[in-house]
Amino acid sequence: MSAKDFTTTFITDHSPEEVFNAVTNVRGWWSEEIEGNTAKLNDEFDYHYEDVHRSKIKLIEVIPNQKIVWLVEDNYFKFTEDEKEWTSTKPTFEITAKDGKTELKFTHFGLVPDYECFEICQDAWTNYIQNSLKKLIETGKGEPNGKDKPQTENEKKLSTK
Picture (cartoon, rainbow, N blue to C red):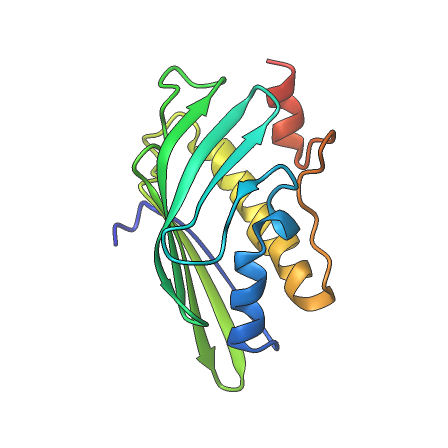
């Protein structure tokens, strides 16, 4: 792993199975506008946020209660010069039991500081993982993008570009 790939980690009292189930419930923490399946090997889903961001994602590695790897097969950003940033990158969720707790490590392999979207994407992923996904695990309710509302301040800014 390059130290430049975006990574964020948290620890929870919940089991690896509960963390895995929450991660695969992408509509529960990232966006309610996900189309397709999000839990099993070779599942594919489409994400879109208004006319600002669209992605086609495939699950290329799924080890229950341990690891999930997405491959971004196609991506569109309205706000970057290279609209295809993220294409061929690999958002990865690693789940590890540690001292009676569970660690979730999220790394977006390929999302590096050289990317024009890095700062905005880093802020968005931090919110989705540290806030929304963690809340879904710990309370049963995340804070995904709704069908008509921006989730983060950065997304609100992007909507006006």
